[in-house]
Length: 144
View (cartoon, rainbow, N blue to C red):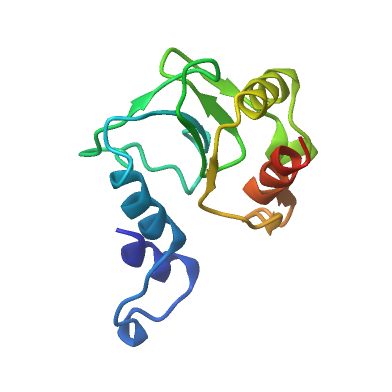
């Protein structure tokens, strides 16, 4: 799936044989956590990296910070706990908003592991502006 997106980003399709991305590696790891509950920090549905089918076929349930078994950090825009998707403001501001900060505090207090699928700190967006990536959230969690 990701390979098909590369030509739209300017890569010559004739020169692409195959590749592995962090999302594929993370998905393999998630498969090893079958039956567990996760708090998912990901992308907004309008963001170019959003894939609504990313968790399809995996035996995982979304859960809030109080009941999750681990935190999956894939993006920096939206906190998903199975009952709602809450904006985090990290992409825009570089810092967790109150909702994400509270969830991270709860997860840290419970000693939950965080799986960071994308440790980048910043990105240049298609419009030329800069955005803050999941690595910013991982650093904040590590500091707790």
